[in-house]
Amino acid sequence: MFAVVQTGGKQYNVTENDVVRVERLEHAVGDKINLDVLLVSDGKKTIAGTPIVKTAEVTAEVVAHGKGDKIVVFKYKPKKNVRSKQGHRQPWTEIKIVSIKM
Image (cartoon, rainbow, N blue to C red; front, top):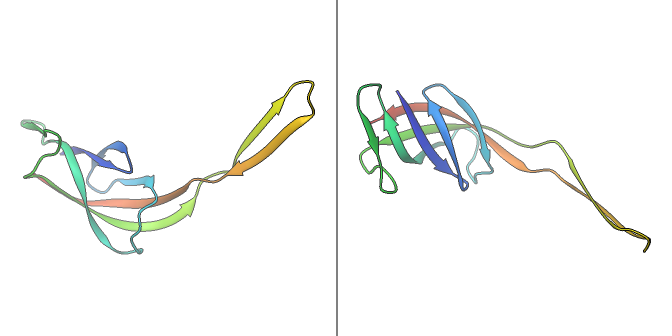
């Protein structure tokens, strides 16, 4: 059984016991959360939502929080001696899919 869930403006294809890194969620480690289900399938029957499936439920547990690798943003204008350097580390939350119910 698999489902397509949405969180943080992105969509993820998940099955039970998957560990997925998603955009930062404001939940403590160990909390159980319910995700919006866009599509769910058990191999024989597939249900697609408009936009979400009301009867389906995907439960996940927050495993960890962290930050991604540093991305260097460097801008310059040629022949003008204008340069700016900036770094960015995207925060993430790691969740484990506990159950998928149709």
